[in-house]
Length: 479
Image (tube, rainbow, N blue to C red; front, side, top):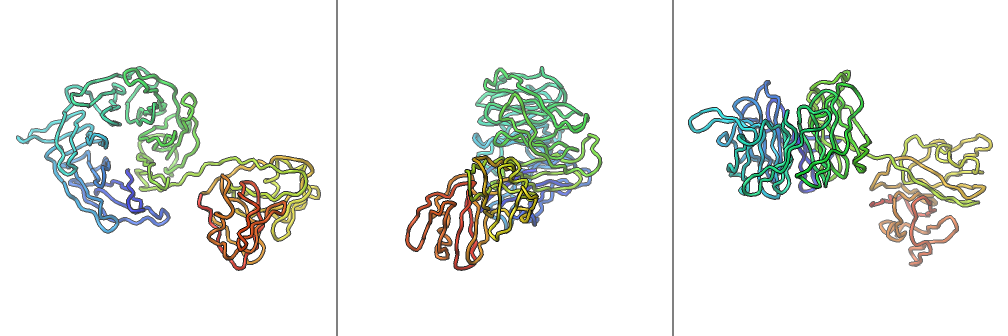
């Protein structure tokens, strides 16, 4: 599983028994397969393909049959791609690859091939120079120095190498390769499988039933320190596979458990914050389900490769909390958080004893003292008037949706502020200013665009505003 973005379009790269598939996921609701590139070995017996991208080039390998290294030029997407290199001269099979873009090197784990005399050879790790992207050349064959290697993460010549049965090795590949450290004493020591580094945190997985993920402090690469361990806590036989880290979130393809996401902002206490189960049969542990993940698309969408079910494109929205201050008497309020099940009573739950009346723009009311609710579910983006007995704080939970919009009707509207930060009301209404007669806040202070008068200043999150328009328009929040 890999991802690629260019010219405001996004693509998923996924392997199959046939070869490499490139799928346009710019509109994730309607993914479109742009092309498929047949592997040098294409067979039902293929189980492993791996990918990495350097610049405009996609590097593809396979770990079965008479395969090859393929390099695919992506520069003409979405119209076409071009296979510019397809050779087994350097190697025929590889289990995993990783490209250090800073130093222009490709690392191939569990590499296999045939020499000029057709003698079969294997290597735990080979390093190739790709400064000329379509003419890779061998730099180092590390088979003599590094044991069985499954995966690797490299940045600026410092490599964290996953060696099943040995642990994590840290090597430096600047000029003459040298080993910096070995990390082999930790809980749930097993088949050290894959890892990812972000800042001073390195997280790796042992591909064994029920084994924890490990979070390691790598401030000093020569002296790694275990900080914490964590897992999905779904099944005693659950197995973590591949992972990536973005913005202190660890995205793990967790086989039967699907996608599991952990927040490591506090490295001492990783917390699971999201998941999506891609594996439909009963979860019993085992090597089926989600086994590839990519989390670096500009949209924030997450790509998952499921062994049985194929490609998943996921969007993750975090539930947040907003506090809205109201003062004794009348207020106009709104929330920038979306909850499809948010009712008037739930919105006011924290201050229900203080509420005299709540009403919407049409005059429908919620009267808690009389147990009467004429509002029901609240409309996202709409503002509401509330009368309270004393100063109080409304607490709302929901999801913030960036770039939302509100449809305004001709005449008077009461709108919310769908932004997490204050917005100058002139800027907010600039795209519809010719249709705006008047905007005012809860105390009657006005903005009159035709008179270039702004008595409101900023539209504030949590508050609501009345707006009179000459026609139906769409108000867009750019945040």
